[in-house]
Amino acid sequence: MGKRERYEPGTFCWVELATTDPAGAKAFYTGLFGWEAEDVPAGEATYTLLRLDGDEVYGLYALDAARREADIQPHWLSHVSVEDAEAVASRSRELGGTVEGGVVDVGEHGRFAIVRDPSGANLVAWETRAGARRVNDPGCMTWNELQTREPERMAAYYAELFGWKMEAQREDANLAYVVIKNGGKSNGGIMPVTEPQGDAPSFWLAYFTVASSDDAAAKTQELGGRVYAGPMNIGAGRIAVLADPQGAAFAVFAGETDD
Image (cartoon, rainbow, N blue to C red; front, side, top):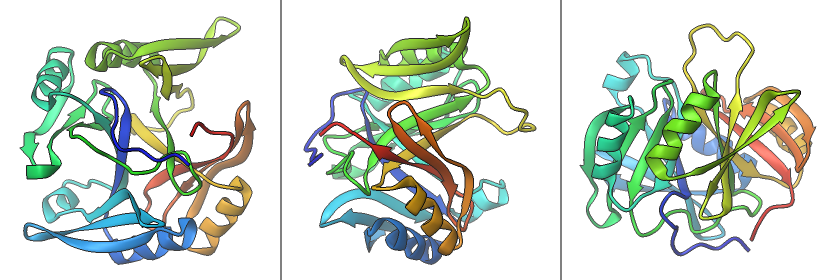
């Protein structure tokens, strides 16, 4: 099983859902992945811990009024383990990125900063000792992928920000994909976006392992979600890009994973 007690700096360690309908989202994801939901107080708000067989795997919370007024749509937000959130925030600014709201202290849980890369994608730099208690198993996070029209520029940005190594994969001299390596291990990817999508910014797409991408896509539709792409075969397995009923995009993967 993909049990985890700690994460090396630079490793994707957590994802959480910001949504306009926590109750609806809980019903959808518990039905799709078998997660168990527990609401816990978080100041004046409520944070929902999502567990799989008792292991904390993800979080969920309601978008506040200010974000809704700013037209922030429901989304999954990927987290990277770091040693110093303040240093990462400062370095992001130096590299042309921005930081939303500065560095936030969350007591015993650590500190975090929401950094936005120059192409508009948000990522959390999380200074913490822990993260998801399980990864790669069915119902767990297995991959995080940046969808961007500026893959080479963003690869350079993140290499400087987190010390990631980038392995470019090319087809007929064109960049097809970038595999992100951290500490010698595959840690995510960068997907060049070539199809026109209006002015939509870049974003990080979280992948969850499933036994069958086809079954997950069918179940998503049954539960009121949408299928954006696939299911389709890739070299390592079979994927589908989906969305929950509130519009938050995510992907599923069926294939071999690491422990």
